[in-house]
Amino acid sequence: MRKSIQFISRGVVLFFLLLLCASGYSAVHSADVSQNGRVSLGELLRVIQFYNSDGYSCDATGEDGYRPGAEGTKDCKAHDTDYLTQDWSIELSELLRLIQLYNTGRYMTDVKSEDGYAGCTDAVLDPHIIPVLGDEDGNYLTEEEEEALGISGDTGEIPIGIRLGQAAAAAIDALELYGYWTSADPESQLPEDRPYLYLDGESSCGSCLDPFNLERMYNDAYELRNPVTGEFVVLGGVALQFLSFGSFSHLGRGCDFAGFEQCYWDGEQRRMDVVTILSILGIDPATV
Image (cartoon, rainbow, N blue to C red; front, side):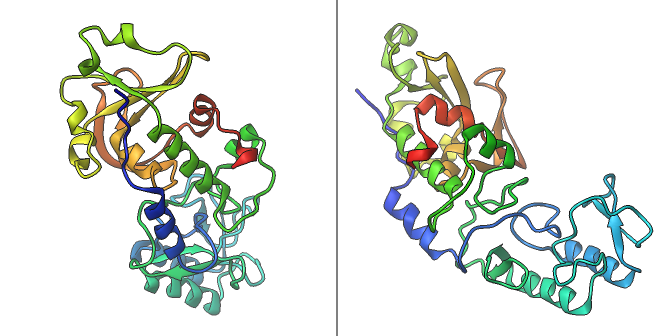
C-alpha cells in the first residue's frame, strides 16, 4: 500500500508565503553573520565599530569578511550597510537604517527599498524560510545551483528557489514509501523503474508517519532513491519538514550519508543537495 508523507498541505504553504512582508524573500545581509534572517545586537555592534572607525575594509579572515579601518584592501563586495555611496565608510543615516532592521526583528529582500531590504516582524515571517548563503539575487538558490540548473533569470512573485522546493515537496509526498514493515525482505519489494522513498530501522512504522508526529519523524532518516539513474540522497525528517514550506535549507538535525543511524542534532544550518533532489524527481526548473 502506498504511504505518503504529508507534512503540510500546499494550501497552507501558500498561505504562509503570502504572509511574507514587503515584496520578496531574503538574501543574506552582510551584517547577518549568523545568516538567520535577523540582525542581532552583537551584529549591530559590529557595524557600529565600522561607523566609529575611519571607514572599513576587507578581511577574509575576519568574522564577517571585513575589518574596521580604511587601510586594508577593498577587493571584496562592499558591506550592505554601505549602500548610499559605497565609499567604504558607514554614514549615520546608513547606520540608522540598519538599526531599523534590527528593531523589526527580521528582514527580507525588497528591491524597491533604499538599501534592498525591508524589515519584517516575527508575526509575519515564517521561520522555515531561511536566507541562503551565496544567494546574491534573493531567489533562494546559490549561484552554483543556478549555474548547475541552467537558471539565468527569475520571474514571478514567488522566487524560483521556493517554487522548486514546493515542487520537490509535492513530488516526494506522492512517492511510494518502503521500509521494514512492507515485508520481511523489503529490499526485494523495491521498484526498479521509478523513484521512491525508503525508511529503515525499527524505530519507525507506517502508523508513525503522521503530520502531527513531527518529534518522532525528526529522529528518522529517509533515502530518496532513483533506481533508474542510481542517484540517492539521505533526508532527515527535519529537512523534509522545511522542504514542505519550499525551503531547501533547514536548521537543526543533519543525517550522515554513511548510514541511516547517523542522525544528530546540533542546531546548525544545512543545505540540501538541490540539484540531485530535482534530478531524482525528474523536475525541470524551466517548467516550474
